Figure 1 (cartoon, helix red, strand yellow):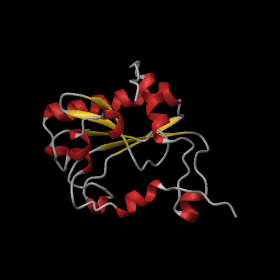
Figure 2: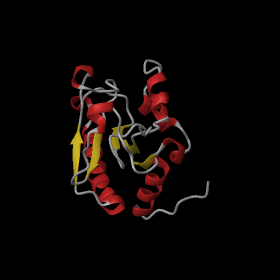
Figure 3: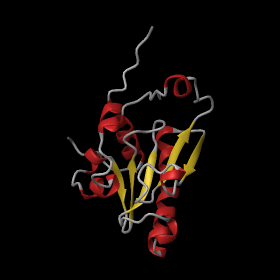
Figure 4: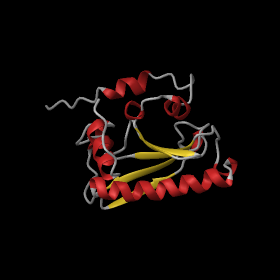
Amino acid sequence: MEIISAGWRMEYIENDSGKECIFCARVEGCDDREQLILRRGKAAFVLMNRYPYTTGHLMVAPYRHVATMSGLTEEEASEVMSLLAWSENVLARAINPDGFNVGINIGKCAGAGVPGHIHVHIVPRWEGDTNFMPVVSETRVLPEVLTDTYRKIKSAMGEEEQAG
């Protein structure tokens, strides 16, 4: 039998999600690379999902802590959609997926992992990218570590990576 390690999952399992909003906490951090933030706009930002469904799984969120799309200002809603389109383009250049899933979960019963802070998921997909692992063992296999994907996306953005 082969063992697949997903050590990062323990951080997720042990995380006390009641303490603070992950979006508010990450955007307040001063190191965008450490926080996996790819782009900051005036009203919203793009970041990588620390617990991705697949390689390149990004999220777009407003800075303001608001629970629903209807709670967004016009400026926030416009920028979220603009950054979503930007994310699609940069992911296409960076990792060349065959398609994308885009989704918003509003409310805990709808599957929102962070029900108090609206965010949009953009998940790259490839032909044949599904397998038995999520069904049989509740495990996702990512072919690349987050920091490598972050570098690829930053490179596709045309931004010079800072030494770190």
